[in-house]
Length: 109
Image (cartoon, rainbow, N blue to C red):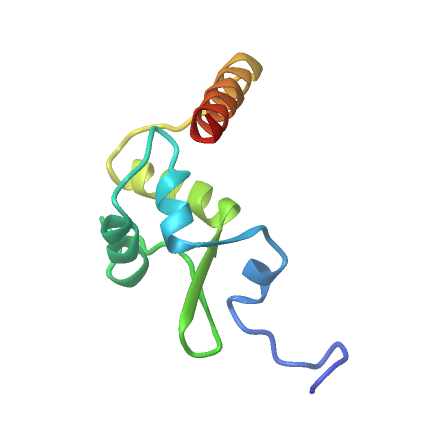
């Protein structure tokens, strides 16, 4: 293992410090609503509007992304489409959290 300040840094090294999630989970957590897992895979492998969803491959097989990478992807694709993305307000975050809680409780019932 190479350590120290002269160690080569992978472009994905920053992704490792973020909250990693699977591609299917990322599809369920997309801002604006769930997308099909195949759509998220396509975004990760081919991209959209010239922007590719950042991912890392673990063990040569399992591909992961991060919640932060999803946000960057949404902002970049929106910018490519000529739209401006703003951060959600506290009320919007609370409403989204309430919806997630309702879904979890409904699954348990």
